[in-house]
Length: 342
Ligand code: BGC
Ligand code: CA
Image 1: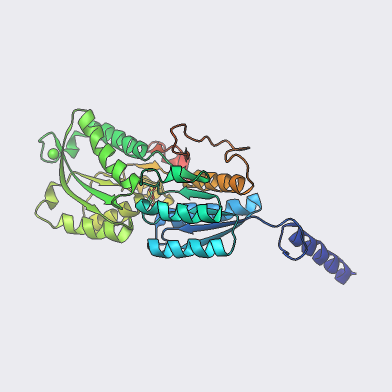
Image 2: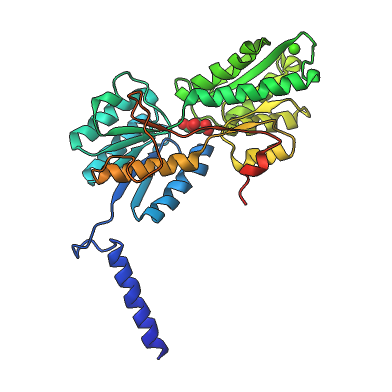
């Protein structure tokens, strides 16, 4: 009897498998395939937030997503896109390695007549997005993260006169920038510092370093070097354009037995813990979960030939950028608990 039930269960399972598109030979509705990449699996935010949500949400949506690692090499990504096209994926979801190299990818998709959703790194070449009617972008308004981070820092600076170590009324800061030419890195660098200037507070940049990988190792190495440099004792504020680099800077500060006001962007789980422990003064939620969902929602609609935002809550910008921009949010010692996973 038991065996009969087990066999019956197996038959049901097999039927469900065919129904879900697992069997290609039956002519049953084929599962939609999304060919995707992450510019580097070594990136904390991309690998820790966006990739898992892509995988989870694809299951929820009943589509198949194949995600490859471009290992920080645009040439590798170009080849990966060729392979996806040869495999006849239904749609591409692409995280550029080099934001200035979008046109090559767009041209490939256009030639193959496969819709393309770019995400996280916005194309910087003028005209690239307009060159194909089936390319869209999902990301953020880069400047917004810098503005929010800047406003948090200005408010805290005003509330903590002791932070002005040399009492000269000027903020002596160091800045970990991230990838040069990346719209997020460029806008954050500009806007966070501008918030002080707009508030009438003078700033002095003691050091700024870029890193194409936005990495913790880089944050650690640079902060450690700055602390032992001639201006080490003058640093009053550490501005980090992402949490990954902030974690490295925190390590270096701890190793040197120092504590300085320090801010990041992304609101990774570890950043929330650092805020709880008083090792970080704030971060900005970069909502990778919703960016992954929006990317897949647009990709699925595009693959079906539907208007990309149909049946979703996403809105395309009206400025011709063909973009969905997910908002950033400030994360402070007051509200960080709201962002911790329950
Ligand atoms: C994130 C960074 C990440 C970068 C990768 C940014 O939006 O804030 O943490 O390294 O995207 O492109
Ligand atoms: Ca000062």
